[in-house]
Length: 212
Ligand SMILES: N[C@@H](CCC(=O)N[C@@H](CS)C(=O)NCC(=O)O)C(=O)O
Image 1 (cartoon, protein in one colour):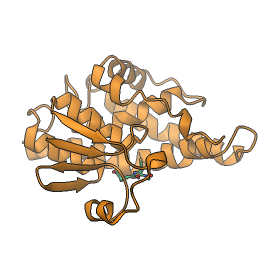
Image 2 (cartoon, rainbow, N blue to C red; image 1 turned 90 degrees about the vertical axis):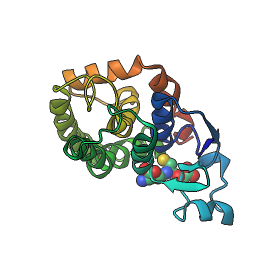
Image 3 (spheres, helix red, strand yellow; image 1 turned 30 degrees about the horizontal axis):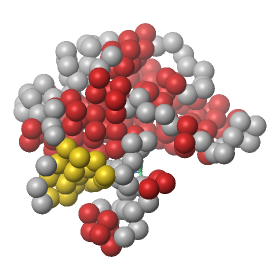
Image 4 (cartoon, rainbow, N blue to C red; image 1 turned 120 degrees about the horizontal axis):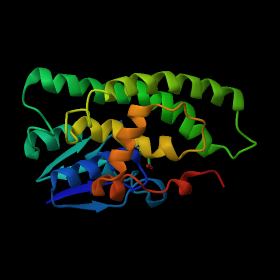
């Protein structure tokens, strides 16, 4: 049995839960992090010395870092479509997974989403947010151009890289920000929302993360 530690409101936990559901793997999830706490214990430290979720246990082995976890799930249990064995095909998907962590996450979560969650309207640094939004639109244009190539990053069905990159789009499209219309990105998001695994594990309210 696969076990995941992590709260449902964490986008990194959502990446793993979505991948498990797409592959069709039986699993259990234990609430941890955020209001559930549990990351400060010696037992959690032994599972992930960073004291962050998600953590996945498979058999007696523990893994952390959401993108590494979905690569593992793909390599061990996924179809050729979800995790291609061909090194070049896979590297072209690794690119988008790495790009998400190094480019999209800072542009969106760090510069726009988190400041909006941590500060109430009227208490936000609007100039910094405007700069963040401008940077985010440049990054989203790059994603939009890539999405012109097919329904999902790996072809006709989602792959591990979609689970890393696509997870952020629910927040992107529901946050109260001005978005430049990007047709491929919009169509990709619309496709994602029709997938039961995405609707169940990713389209999760983030209202509890807002400053009260
Ligand atoms: N790069 C890591 C980031 C993990 C991370 O930052 N997790 C956050 C939740 S998204 C966390 O554990 N925060 C502390 C908490 O939830 O209490 C990954 O992709 O798994």
